[in-house]
Image (cartoon, rainbow, N blue to C red; front, side, top):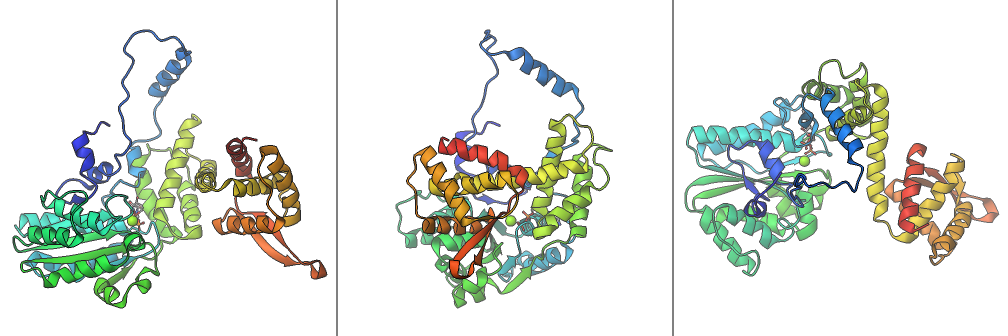
Length: 448
Ligand code: ADP
Ligand code: MG
């Protein structure tokens, strides 16, 4: 996809008009895209292209197992949203007064990740916008994911982005914050209207810049003569509201709506619907959907995780030239997703922690039993000398092991050895099948 530069700058925050939400989500992840041209036609025989050409030809002649793979992407908006009827109705009834030019209450939605919060809110505001347009009611809706960098990382940037959506040509930096609020207030207050600001992952915003901004935004209403602002806050962190300043908490949570985690049966409904649209007929074998749902329900009922599993399982099926998505691919997909998550976590660890982890992995390759801190220390010392790293004391290594435990890669349990003091029993918290692959990566990073 080639995106014009001018388009790239915009689009981080968006006024939801009647544009499809699919486009909206697509346009928000445009960073780092560049275009790759096809061959100029001049011969470049420096690589053995024939084999690859053949591979691509084969790929094209084979029938894909997917009817529409897009359907399994997180950005896809399904037509129906099972098991969220109650929440959707509640959001709709709280926001409905905006259609009569009355100010709706602020709403706070909370629930663990993948419980359909973003989907439900976007669904309601899109419908609300459609009716408002039809009935010629002045209603503006902003949606902002606060996890996005550069828009929600300072109060100035956020308010500037809002002002910009109303056509104000404000600089990216430079004005005092008061001034930027003044510009914003002036531009939205030019006529009577309701303005709904959806702050998704609002906990991230408060973590970065504190909760004062929420106070200011809700208090702007007393300054505004024509426009009324409503805040819809969404959080994955269930405790978030309790840490807010009481004034902010009471205005933000005038209404709150809980999104409980899905159970395995509910996940099955969600998955079946998507699988029907995503895969060709007779591709998905019996038991696949229920296994996916059961896996995703194990930690908490996370629909995103369930959909990821199904998508990755489909990709692995295709990669292995299989025509049927069978249960074994769900296991491989689960392993791959876990591995990718752990991979990201350990890649950014300091070198010392990487050596500590590698020591534990190496000991576990030989046996899946528990190992003790003393054994890990032996291994750690020999690995340190292989990669020329300074050796830490056993006590420090013990601290590193605790950190790895916190990351969820290992389980370290303190046991007492009577008068010989205490030690730790260390077990793997990742599947042994992933250990070999991860060890190899660790060795490469450490230059062993
Ligand atoms: P949250 O915002 O709570 O983390 P999302 O709304 O982003 O969760 O949902 C995660 C993924 O699961 C999305 O791809 C969404 O389409 C899908 N999803 C969640 N709930 C449902 C549902 N009830 N029906 C269909 N798809 C759902
Ligand atoms: Mg969300």
